[in-house]
Length: 257
Image (cartoon, rainbow, N blue to C red; front, side, top):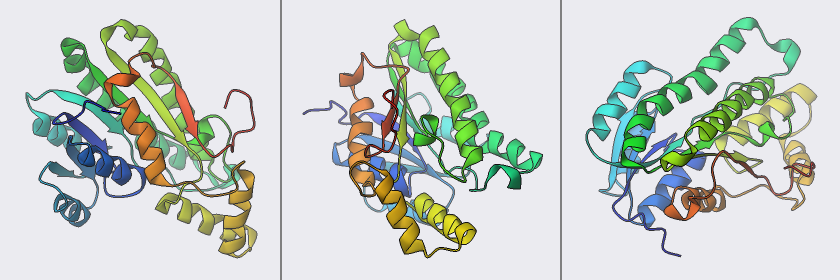
């Protein structure tokens, strides 16, 4: 299938690891151009070596100065789509959280995504085309153990995206969410370690337990996840907006998963 994204410009957050890196790699393979954003300059420089179609911005999207740098990098060019993605808040059970943890989680999971969306949207609406894709979590459909901050805050993003998609549905700009389940990313490795610590069970056993929770009995591949992301970033997805699609190997048991 021709995704019609050759020479099109995309913005990708969290571009040096996990889903962000997998999506960036596949966008470049399809001939697209990418502005890659991540916290670590050295990792971005390494990524940039893989293609002359990659531009980089180092920093944390939750800092307003980084948003300004990204907008300056885009300049007057047409931005076809954006992958709004970054790491989540720390793993912990409800009773271990403090109010300061919730304040920080709002900043790192919700606030910057609204700021970025509001910054990109006017130009996309003016050009009558755009693809905004938010990488959240399967926890939107089914809570993940010991991830209460993520479970709660990502639902706020869902409400925001769904509402906005209804308000601007005729604009040519679509907004969708992908909710990954258990994939082979550093985030999952951290979660395995946290559960191992809390339960005093070896990580290998924790990993097996997580795999067994899925219908397919295995941990997912970020590259497979990225394939769906690319389709949603393409013109083929014009009739899909305001949706939260879980990519979870059958983890969610509800019929609306």
